Length: 190
Image (cartoon, rainbow, N blue to C red; front, side, top):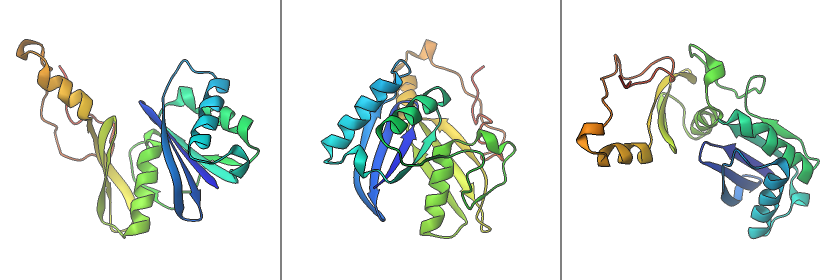
């Protein structure tokens, strides 16, 4: 089994694959206070919940947008199995060219989403990711990730809608809809 782990701000999504078939997919809460051992216990419990065990892990890949959790979750996985666990980041060949102002700032889940989308169909395309934030990433016909935008996610948007008008955040229109750097905020609070 190949284990995939995506560490996000709110959840850690874990999937197990046999060949190209998803065997299970589960989520854990992202907890900055949890120790390596606590993450190992949570991962074992998640595997057992779906009828899998650490002994079945032949390899894995970990992507993270929460650097403070990456090392702990990776160490927890290494406690559970001796399989090689790759980390999405600089040095890992993805097969997609990054035409961004600062490629090192690209979130692992956005890169993985673009690679997965290109496996399904050639560019040009827009890859949409909706989680804590909503991200739209542009891939051109040359299969290059050329930019994107990151927007407030559903929870933040809902909170903004229910605040009293006097305390609602003020937003300004973006200078352009897409950017070669998805970290240029499309809207900024004064």
